[in-house]
Amino acid sequence: MEILISEERIRERVAELGRQIERDYQGKPLTIVGILTGSVILLADLIRQVQLPLRVALLQASSYKGAVTDRGSLTINDAFAPEVEGRHVLLLDDIFDTGHTLAALVPKLRERGAIDVRTAVLLRKQGRQEVALEPDYVGFAIPDAFVIGYGLDYDDEYRHLPYIAVLDPNAHEAAH
Ligand code: IMP
Ligand code: MG
Image 1: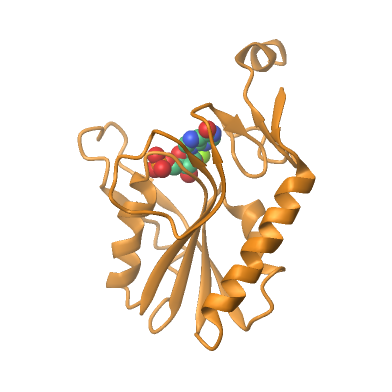
Image 2: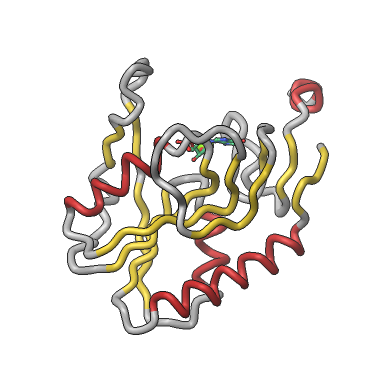
């Protein structure tokens, strides 16, 4: 697999994002909400770089299978139901690709009483955006390739890789 972003570059960038978040959320009741499952590695690393009082929550969203025509119809799994009433929410995902996931979740968190909802992603794929929403914090802009590692999966594998790599379909096939 071709490594696109090394473990060290990720560590440095996540620390920078932490500094930026500290400055922006000084004195505000902050809840960082990680979207399962892709954001868990970023969530764990990022929250340890933010020296502010904060709460952590998780959210699981699912779209109705086959509803390709209505990509915005994501439902939040209420088993996780993050408590966001009166909170400044920073919604975290692994990657901003078309943007439909974040664009659908931001209004849902507002409906649930969040004062403010901003978004943070480790990666942003270039040339793929289909929504008006712009992510507020971006770790790295990357070319339009399918990437894995640091939370990102292919068929639910590879999330544990400490770096970001471009998926090599041949290597994947050979290993299965
Ligand atoms: P969006 O709604 O199109 O922005 O897609 C976001 C979701 O698609 C992410 O949370 C990922 O789960 C998945 N995704 C998009 N691109 C990739 C990729 O290159 N590798 C792994 N997952 C991806
Ligand atoms: Mg995924």
